[in-house]
Amino acid sequence: MSRGKNLKDTIAKNGLAHVMAAHSPLSACLAEEAGFDGLWASGFELSALYGVPDMSLTTMTQHLDMVRAMADRSTLPIVADIDTGFGNALNVIHAIQQYERAGASAVVIEDKSFPKVTSLVADGRQELVRIEEFQGKVEAALATRADPDFLIIARTEALIAGLGEQEALTRAAAYEAAGADMILIHSKQKDPGEVESFVRAWSGKVPIVIVPTAYPEMNEERIRKLGKIAMVIYGNHAIRASVTAMKDVFARIRRDGGIQNVNSDIVSVEEIFRLQGMEMAKAEEKRFLR
Ligand code: SPV
Ligand code: MG
Image (tube, rainbow, N blue to C red; front, side, top):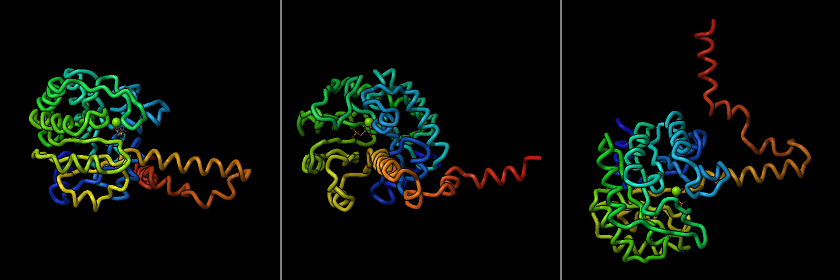
């Protein structure tokens, strides 16, 4: 079964796919063990991992390599965040070929201009491409995918850019007309009202994807009640959780003058061995090393 089919099946069965951000094979494994339905190969998380802003500074190759590495270590479907598609519709064609071969199940492509600015930053320069131009990108993606279950998710940044609900609905309808499998609506309002209003007004046939980072009260119970939403992406919780944990442990080691106190509060070295697949490596040594 293709990984794209897995994602579609999860949605058909459960109504809602729970997708966790990942920025490394290790975070992908942890998301899988926690029971998520898919991985979000987040551009924001990868940029943070490299210590640079999420402003089209990391390259497609860097992101693609990470998608490949995650696909090698996790069986979960990967929703690849391909930002603007790395250029125009021709760049999108190249990207879709590459990401599908790399083992992704879906891509999210957004209607911002390249180079983009991350969505949640205050006073970010948010410029959108023309609707027709973005329809061309969506059509290029659809014409390129080899597997019909490889999902093309069109993301409109109209609310992020402050253009209002009507523009967001117009764009979403135009992207559905171009063939998008789902519409991702993003918002940076601190309460869910903006997205809820969009979802209620949405009369399209394709389902909606949300990334509720800015409005965390939008929990899964509320999402299900609202309806029309088929996927929730927890956009940056892997990198934020890692930073929280590292800050805390590093500070304690400095304060305590050693590792004697933190030792029992962090996972054991054996747990890392387990996550690395050490047991299998030892069995292979036994079997094949002569
Ligand atoms: C990402 O995780 O890279 C996203 C979501 O695109 S956001 O950062 O909220 O725009
Ligand atoms: Mg992104």
